Image (cartoon, rainbow, N blue to C red; front, side):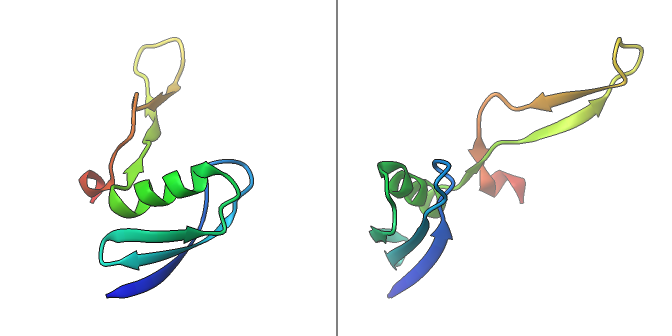
Length: 81
C-alpha cells in the first residue's frame, strides 16, 4: 500500500517542505529536500523516530534554585508513550 506523507524538514535551517512516498513502512522516495539532511531526517523520523529530552529540576540546598538537565543522547519515541 503506497501513500504520501508531507513533512517540514528540521535537519538544517532551510526548513524544506518534503513529500515522502511510502510503501508500508518503507521510504520509497523523498522530494523537496535541498540537501542530503532532508532524506536522512525522513528516514530517521519515519522508520525509527528519536527525541532529545530536556527539563528543569528544582535543587534543594544548592547554589541555584533550579537547573536545566538534558539527556546525553536521543531516545526512541516509543519509550515516551
